[in-house]
Image (cartoon, rainbow, N blue to C red; front, side, top):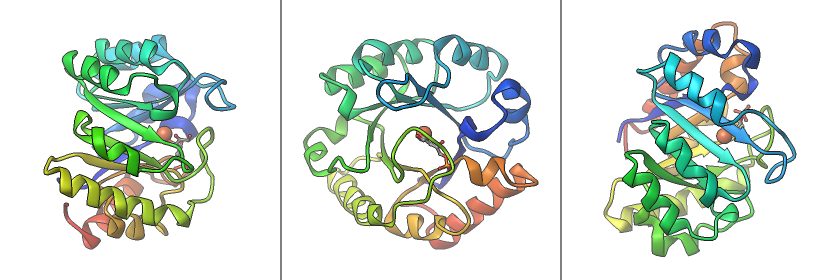
Amino acid sequence: MANRIHPSVLNANLASLDGEIRRIPSSAGIHIDVMDNHFVPNLTLGLPVVECLRNNHRDAFLDVHLMIENADVHAPAYAELGCESVTFHLEASHAPIRTARQIRSLGSRASIGLRPQTPIEPLGDIITEFDMVLIMTVDPGFGGQKFLDGMLGKIRRTREIVKNSGQEIWIQVDGGVSESTIEQVADAGADVFVAGSAVFRADDPDAMVRSLKDLADARCAGH
Ligand SMILES: O=C(CO)[C@@H](O)[C@H](O)COP(=O)(O)O
Ligand SMILES: [Fe+2]
């Protein structure tokens, strides 16, 4: 799978989301962080805003990252809206297989997210239920944090598990990805890179997207 850069709009101007998304046409996807102030200590946006983004950006690949409790109840609604990818957290789900199947049956890619402290190994048994695994490389809740180097081993082990599954499952890395960290993340086995502050704090966000893609491709053009 070719590397993909999915900028997170968390650190964009949230009052001008439409315009912010138009600033990054080179992106393969738009990463939207939905937070409920329970699963994480921060509150962002939810279904009504994502619905407006869907209507205004019909051609965009919307990659929704749900950091919310009761994921089994809420996640399918994002698939119903037509988001291409819906990530919910393992820690917030009582029935991850059922929820993944529901998301897929609605035509979206199902993805499972893991906090830094949550081990990847138990997911091995059910990984084929998912189209993507999201490895958090900061504590979820805020953009602009430092990449946790200790997560590189977990990314490598995830790549092994995916390889052994024989299926094409994307590995997304989220948190602290920038020009200075993306090469080691690509080396470790990721192929979908979320970058929030690195992109939106750059003078030219779209040039930064292209630079991140080039850096990742130079390490590995695909897994
Ligand atoms: O899900 C999250 C934070 O919880 C991320 O998507 C961040 O928004 C990424 O921002 P940077 O770490 O790249 O600034
Ligand atoms: Fe995220």
